[in-house]
Image (tube, rainbow, N blue to C red; front, side, top):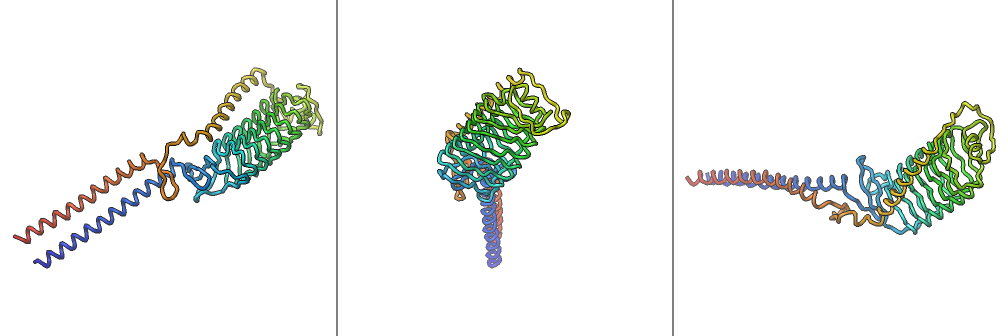
Length: 358
């Protein structure tokens, strides 16, 4: 009987040990999963000189650059996450930056991302870029030339505003429109060819381009704002006879060079009321001022805007409050289960011991 009791006690003790091991393993896995979920969903991650976040598609969006390189190639991956976007103000006012290469994994560049990079002279953009937001290259005063990829369809407000050294630019074949202030104050720009895909040229797109001498406008363009070429006293429009471009040139006393003949019905000229133009100008001007201010603040105040985060061994910043609460909740549940197992083992052990002594 005594031998049987010892065997049973050994079995129960082994069961308790195994239960404890299972509990420890499950809790460790739970805590690790909780931290990873936090990192994927709402944390700022760090890799070399980059700060980034993970979007809903599991891809990286670079939010800040903390380095001081003059020549930089942005990586296509950060810690195994594919880089798809450069966020607002990421490289804002990086005065040391002179050359940058954007990887083909990037499809979008947000407001003011390279604004006021005053020494930037060489840019190679992603061949899969589809969207350039407001003022992305504004005040890049040493930028002389740039080629925009054919994948680009949307170029928002003031993308190259105040790029006073810009002399040459190739617009993409799939661009839909030229946005407000796109080349405002680009005083060294001398000529530009508008691709066939463009249908309209917005307010003040070339305002104060004082050395602009030649612009080629295709037949598909059906609307140009009356102030698109404000203070462009040297400009001559090159286009096709019977096109909207010729009509616009005649109505605004701009010299026109006929490159050929097209049927007048090919393009339907659009008449825009002066009041519509004034209203649009007012709205877009206010919007751009706000976005420019936001881009500047995003770089100068980025540190103060984010609460300090604890950092794990992998370099992942973790929100202490949310993670600790989740881990404590899970630990409480697992602890209750483990306590119940141990209590049951002890109860059985006591019961058998009493029976043995009786």
